[in-house]
Structures are given as structure tokens and as C-alpha cells.
Length: 409
Image (cartoon, rainbow, N blue to C red; front, top):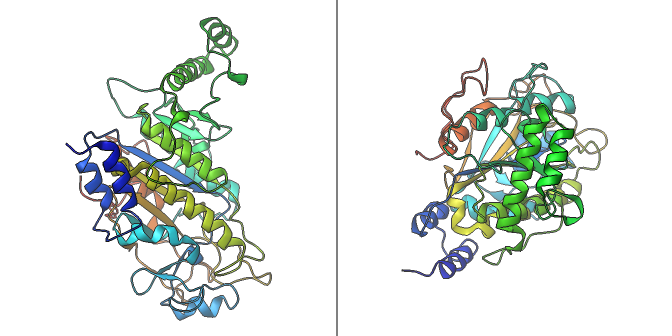
């Protein structure tokens, strides 16, 4: 039998060197001695990232006509996009993700988003996280509803975790999710032990609805203390960059490797509201994308074969205007782009119907039009990756369309 530690180190190195065959994560997972739980990791790019400069439609001249100072040059030019399929290209700051696209474990969905027409950050994020675009009365988040539908005999109090100082809208509800900023300090401030006496007093103080949450949180703290995931160092030569997203993903990787029953993890990263001085191949957006890309690439490298059981997906509340504004930035738009990475992804492809950037093709004569509802993508992730039995209450009143972004189960 191949030594597992040797296998993980070797397979991790193979991700960035040598020939990459279609979906290395699937092959790695199949070769591993054991298979873990399936996990979905969602990253919210808050502030509305410019998807047109992330995944560049360099094959369309209208893109360059609309962005005389912030367009990313075509592949082959200095600072040019990294070609994906002859029409789309990666922003050069996303270079660390390029090997995963070539390996068919990374895919994109373009012209995707929420059908609601709001250009308010707050409302758009709320609608996307609730999973009910246009409906403000929804009380819980769609990932909470989805996790709550699963009927395992043993439910881990760490099945749904947000790396966040407060519970995000998307996981709020009755699924028993927990939020934390540091897994080594989750529980009692100052590193004190979680004692039965303190638990009793705290539970009494928050009696009622919060009592159950308090109990689940204490149980989660006990599991974390026992598993001690923070002792696990990055594997396979992974080096995380500095920054909040990288720190969150490093800790999510530790939870996955600790086998604490994690099914859904959530993290967010802000700084995408580029109204002025956005930049093209270099500049404000480029710097943010580099850290974003390097954090995700480190996460995938760190997990090695375990990525065969993980799918990471990115989302943002809406896109940005096709035309640059007078401040060499972009304003609030409509359609955007999502990234998917992992063993179950039908990668090496930019999914979605491209609507075009001609004046007659734009939404309200200013934005990329939506051709894929974001709920379609999450519907496939929830059913195929997490085996959620029904989506009727997850996305009430909506019948998701199959988009084929994941491999067959």
C-alpha cells in the first residue's frame, strides 16, 4: 500500500508541476485510502466584483470599446489575459488558478446572478443569501434551509460553519450553524475550559430560542478542543498569503482535515466596490484578485486528495457596468461570474450562455445581461455535492434548471 503521507505530498506537488490530466482531484480521491464527507465551501465577494475583468471576454471587441483605460489586454500582449478557450481569459492576477482550469477541476459560469433588479449592495446580498430574490420577508438563509433538510443519523454541531465574527445571512436559521473567527479561540474567551457549570449558567441566561444555539456552540467547542485542528499545518507545500480570506480558508482546511463532520463552510471577502481607480491588468482590482486567487490555490493545494470531496464556489451580489465611468472605475451592474473548483466540477470550461456586449444586448443599455440564475448553480451543488433531498423549501417558488456544472454522481 502507498504511504498516505507520501501520496499526499507527491500528489500535491503534481498540481503545479508536470502534466495535469483531467480532474486530478477525482483521481487523487479515488487513490486515497479513505474518503471523507462531502463539503461545500462558499465564498462571497462582497461589494460586487467586476466579473468582466475577472474572466475577460477578450474575443469581443465591444469589451475594449467600453473600457479604454481599464480593459485587460488580450492574451499575448504585455499584462494580457491568460487564454481559457479562445474567447475568454483569466485576469493575469488569477494565474495561480490557471493550472486547475487546465486540469479540468476549475470552471466558471459567466452571465450569472440574481434576477432581482436592485443595485443596492444591502438588498442584493440579502436576496442572494436568503435565496429568495425580491422577497424581503424571508427569515433564514438558503444554505441553512438546505443543511436542515439532511436527515443523517449523526449530526455534527460543526456541520455548518461560517468563518465570520457574526452569523451571515446565508447560514442564519434552524440548521444549528456556528460562526467563529478563530477556531483555536472558539468557545470561552481567554482560552478557559468549557465547563458544565458555565454552560448551565450561560444556557439559562439565553433560555428559549437561543438556548439550543448555546448548547450546540458548547458542543462544537468541545469537539474543536478534542480534535485540536489548529495544530494541523498546511500540507503539500501550500503557502497561504496574508489576508482575511486566506486565514479563513486555512482554518476551513484544518476543519476538513480534522474530520469534525463539516458539510458547509462559508467565508466572505470585501473590497470589490471599484467605483474609481479600478485598474486593468494592474492596480486596485488586480491586487485584490491576486490575493483572492493565491488564497484559493493554497487551499486546494493544502487539501490535496481531500479536494476530491470538496467543491468551492464563489459568488457576488451583482456585477458592474460594462462601460467604465469618468473615474476610471465601474458602477453597480447586473450579471457577474461564479467560479467552481473541486473534484466534482465539470471543469476546463466557461459555462453559461454568453449574451454579448453589443448595445442591443445589454441589460438596461449598461450591464451584462443574466442568462443563468445563481440558484441553478447552487441547486446542482446542493443536490449532487450534499445530497439535499428536495429544493422546494430551499428555493421556494423557483424551479431550478440543470446547468451541468458538476460531473455525474
